[in-house]
Image 1 (cartoon, rainbow, N blue to C red):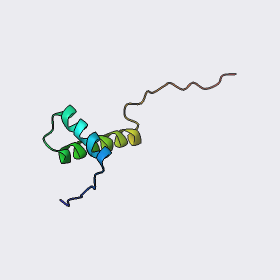
Image 2: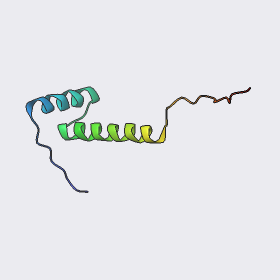
Image 3: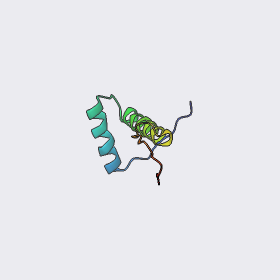
Image 4: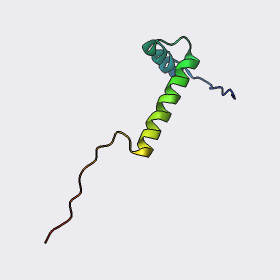
Length: 62
């Protein structure tokens, strides 16, 4: 699997560290991967409509 490297500024590093602690992960790399996977899952859910409410459509009578 190819490895991608992120250049972290101080703010991004602080955010990833917060995610790492919140999720109980060992490294900042794991936190970045966790966030990427979460975003992919949410994106797929939005594409497929999963989790959306369905409403009955009624035609006009008249």
